Length: 157
Image (tube, rainbow, N blue to C red; front, side, top):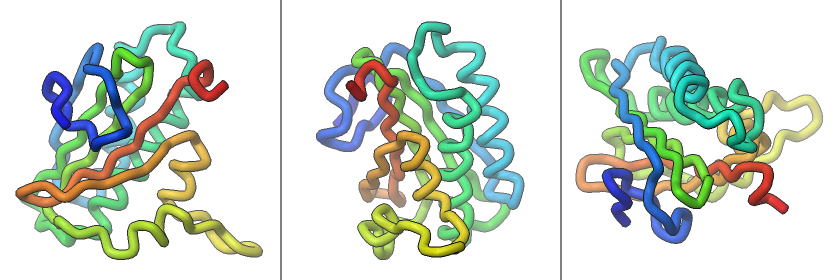
């Protein structure tokens, strides 16, 4: 489903974006850290102060998690890029999307529902969910999009 330049995975976003930002990151071990810093700087600059979201550091962590997963699970060469897109929908929801070249997401349901057990180290998607992200994915012609939909606190009520 297209919304003014952002492909929102069906049934998650129902209105067009207020703004969109897109950036490409080299597929290196620095991609997740770069995505974290860029997300933090971008949201500080463009997210309205009355946004009602969780802490921007938490939002940047969600962006880092998506990029870290894309880098870890795609085996892309270092000259490749992984695209990340951020959008603020008119509904007030934030959408983060990471597009990588691997069309499948093995055991997606298991990965999204995973919970740590007795001292087990937390995993990325669990962390993103704990910070308020609804995770989904959709295959595309040249890979897949993994999406985090984050609602402001006011929409949680």
